[in-house]
Image 1 (cartoon, rainbow, N blue to C red):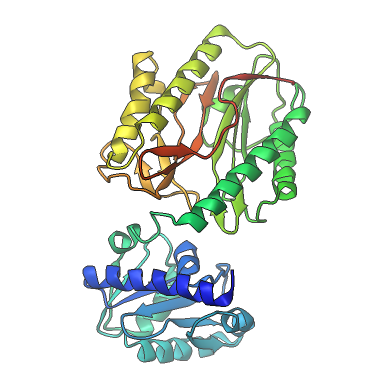
Image 2: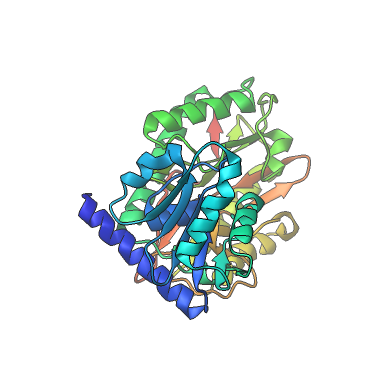
Amino acid sequence: MNQTDLSEIFAQRRNRLMEALARHRLDALALNPGATLTYLTGLNFHLMERPVVALFTLDKPPVIVHPELEKAKIEELPFLVNAFPYGEDPAEWPAVFRRAAQYAGIDARRVGVEPARLRLLEFRYLKDAAPEADFIFAEEALTLLRVCKDEIEIANMRQAVQIAQQALRATLPMIRPGVSEREIAAELSLQLLRAGSDAEFPFQPIVSGGPNSANPHAIPGERRLQNGDLLVIDWGAVYHGYVSDLTRTFAINQVEAEFRRIAEVVEQANAAGRAAARPGVACQEVDRAAREVITSAGYGEYFIHRTGHGIGMEGHEAPYMREGNTQLLEPGMTFTVEPGIYLPDRGGVRIEDNVVITATGAETLSDLPRELQTLPL
């Protein structure tokens, strides 16, 4: 994609931001490094001890306060920004923030922030630079900004799914009794990079065997797989900044009958959740469809989390497939469907796919087998 095309894409996104700010009576938006800043500008910064803040106002190009060492990133942008760089002496930083705030005109104005992202470090510099500004949680204004993906974004997510699936296929041959969770996670991480994932994964792979598989967010440890274990693998890739998030469950040789039963129920719940997804359906209906299958089978108390969450530039973002969320699904929304059953101290099953809402229904981007496969292969 050439610079002109990129400039137009970012201009369109910032125009939509301006509309959202005006609708919510906000005069400006202050952003830390993160997905929203990258979405609006293409800029990627690591959160570190040096503060970085971007200010978006209704009547000026973006303003960015940044360390001098990040100057090259700013110069490569295909559109105009007003940069306020600073050096290594922290004593100079407050004055730079004051100049940026004065230029942007944010003092005594309503400034939106991302409460889950803006750090106290940057907030203090902003508050000192604009003491009369009213800093306001802007989740409502920003929720719809990134929730519907365009064709380029969906193509990137589709590729992230393919990378993740390829990496798991390459990892499966080494899984057998005696191999530890940590060893599997390490091999899967290596295979993700070999398959083409960006270096920064959406999360570190979850590999949990035996009783650990009953913990949805278990951390891979030194436990070695044993015959009769259930093995849950939850992993994802990133491609051009867009993520995939998948889960499959495996049997290590022969497992008890109830484990096979709950695997069948979760597979049916996964199918029901995906089948319920289409434009105009409330997010909670996807959760209800999957949950009804598990509840009817007698395992409702063991399904202990929502059915899914949005994915895109972040591993967890809107929309959320949970009871009480009446947000209606729209074309371009992308999310997970990941029901599970977790039997405490025994084992668990989760099956997770990635879904995109289309004009007429929903497309499942992932296609690895969902039934309980037996390992070793």
